[in-house]
Image 1: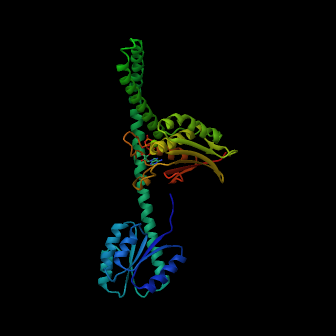
Image 2 (image 1 turned 90 degrees about the vertical axis):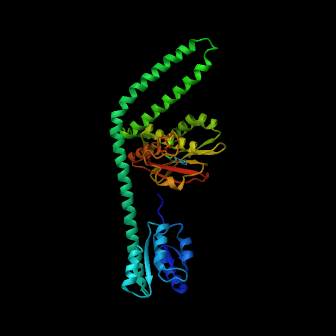
Image 3 (image 1 turned 30 degrees about the vertical axis):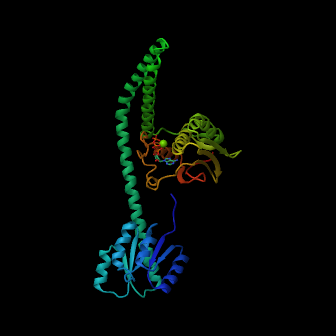
Length: 362
Ligand SMILES: Nc1ncnc2c1ncn2[C@@H]1O[C@H](COP(=O)(O)OP(=O)(O)OP(=O)(O)O)[C@@H](O)[C@H]1O
Ligand SMILES: [Mg+2]
């Protein structure tokens, strides 16, 4: 995930003070936005902030009321109120408004910086807590999947196999019928075959996910790994009228990976890219070496990742597709982590999404 500079919002109508403070904070490495009025503060807060420094007396608004509105816009941010005088009422109002702290003007720069740092620390702690509870939730789901899979896979696999075998019998019998009688029967048979295939695929995903196999690490020739996936998906891409490209630098170092698992990573990412890309678009698989790693890039010219999906992509069962299991990226994440690598998502130079999987070099 990308890290950003801490964002500070300064809301005060005292221009000289704001300018001075902004330049100090900028020197300290903060990303600073300023607003002289309540109305402008609301607009400036839209992209989110980590800490807002707020004068309680603004020309068009009451600071404590504004604080509440700002908290609605950026619930994760902390608010520090600046007041002209210290009274019990202002303190109470500040607490009511959910402010992290309040400072009495004029306050010294070191005091101000210290308060901002403390507020920021609290913001980061809260973010960590949220992340931990999100991970705990994911772990819990994983545990559930594991137990469920163990019990169900056997129960589902056998009848599914039996259905597949019976279907093959049926197909053979239909093929023996006169050519005129065959067509109306073939189409429904094909549909059933497809659906069984889908169920098998789903079951495979569940199994892979619930019981990650041990890795058989080998020296993998990166170019042929990419080439084989591109070759496998070429027909599919053509049918969807998508240009499928590959770019592997010649003489690239080998990767230290389990070839089967690596293939699965590339397949899942490439299929997602194809799914996201409309006809006429492009999907590109690329590999380069960076430091001691091999980076696999999968780019597409689709719509990119929806902001609401960004944080949930790697969650098991998160899907926006009517027939998706939502396990594809969770499996990718698990495999890449198992290799001691990482996976990141970014904006692609092709206009859509870019997934970058990093694996160690051999
Ligand atoms: N290249 C991409 N561009 C845009 N959105 C994407 C892309 N790749 C993944 N996503 C989003 O992430 C979601 C989760 O992807 P994931 O591969 O985990 O599951 P899925 O593709 O929906 O289902 P499955 O892979 O199990 O068939 C997708 O439903 C889609 O919304
Ligand atoms: Mg997928």
